[in-house]
Length: 162
Image (cartoon, rainbow, N blue to C red; front, top):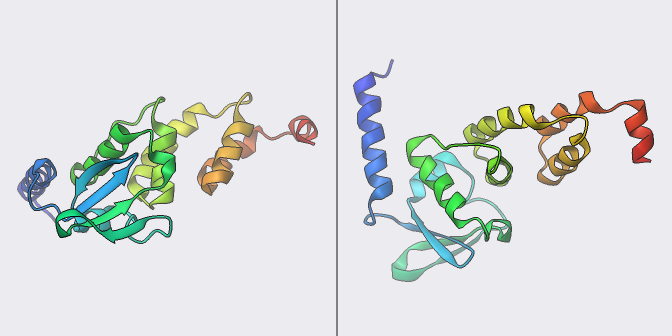
């Protein structure tokens, strides 16, 4: 069993590492802006360094550089918050940001963050919007969101789709 002191110390050190502008070895580019990070933190939390759509090149000052999918270009602050959450393990997920966070977590396999967003989807899917959510789930290849939509399908709704 891990002691509470160990966890608290670990969290303090990870937070200090996230806030430090030294010792980073990665630059994440999105929307022409850079986010500084640490390779081991990215590896522990995601598949960012393994994903096909990421450009992985030697960057400035000999640092490794990745460019995220253009889908995130307009969401620099949110992407920065997501990357910072890799250090502290928490991120505020709410109605205005959950879809983009979910999309990021699906594209880059951030399982703990995906679980956080699914609870917001559960509260959001209804008779009026389930088709929109189903199309979104198909786009990001998320079976969990698709399953949330299935109870809303009915013979009437299926006839309307045709």
